[in-house]
Image 1: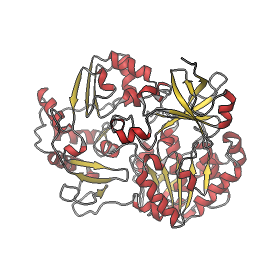
Image 2: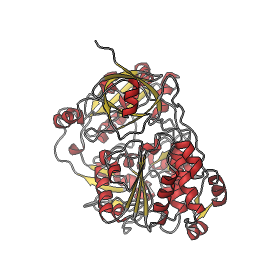
Image 3: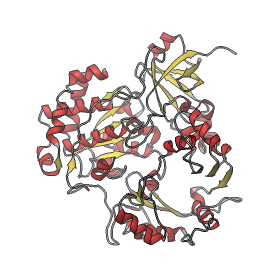
Length: 541
């Protein structure tokens, strides 16, 4: 995603959460916002109350879709065809922002040529979405003064996830809906402080602040600051590490605050890798399912038991403050890392406080360059914040893109890695319920939350349920080419026919036993949102 990141930031929202409520049109695609990001959903509802038009594109008619002016029941994997159809209508009707395109972008003519074949009629043939729905979406989005795109992992967790995001960027640029308040391309991060972890170098190709490891000047700066020789080779992503173990390339694994035995795709493959690795360290608050495989478990502190910062999805860096001491032998994550480094004889880890670590980060990271603990009191500051008197950046790309001109990139519709067939006739998509967080390591230990959603389920359309002879509440076996599990059926009208849904929070019915480990070739993100499954009524006993 190097080209895209250069134009549209590094996975963060181009705009601000607060500004959403002043948008005139909001396109929510691949996001069950009410369940996964309720505070953002609240801003969307406020915008709706002010008169904003709401478009929701999702295979499930989620709660937020009930408020939509247009609901698009898309089939998982058809996003690019649909977006191309919308943009075809915009261009054919002359609704695109010609001045913005001419002044601030490049590559438009090639991009427009590619759109010509994606007529509403052709896109209806591909997706099953009625052509009039495509035209209505195009008109609402293009004609609004301020249109905002909000997306989540329903867009990114595909083998074409990078292309999906590129096409959303194309749509924003096509209509001039970027570089202004209450517009933009706004991804919602999947977990707390994912944005902060990426900002601080928690990716295999960058140092803190998205400074590339294969840039000689950047690497030299960090080598001088840290007093070590640093590799120029890009490392492995999380999902690639599991394959690396089985190939003999990865000998040791250190896992912090993650539970891949439930969260990674194709769990049989993950379990094989965790059993094979020579040395596994798990640093976490609880004995997670993954910690059962560990040779060493290091007990970590919760957010309330430490000082530090978090960075949220709209780039806002915020302070948090220690309320209580960690229990027992638990320690703050940074303290554990410091002591491990010292035990290994590594120099440069003589930090006494989290603030000292932050101060070093600020010196080496231009987008954080104007921040300090003192300045972060209160609501926090949005990066880029480059100098001590910089107030921060509520929205990106005001006058120009980071790369200069924004690049239109033609995108083709490419089917998912695995599509339904006679043996596995349904598309499985996965996601969350509002009562649990990620793999349930914390929320399933909370009696009130667990009582609201104590077990897994599979959602299925009434016609599909009738076709396989099951009713609401029946126990079924859901199987893919990688595994199988038993769950109860929920027969619901609000899911596209031919598609079924499983939440992934439940270890006893782990959805990722079924999912495929095919990766986006650029971002290396697994295709969690599409795989082929079959469903049969479970045998009694």
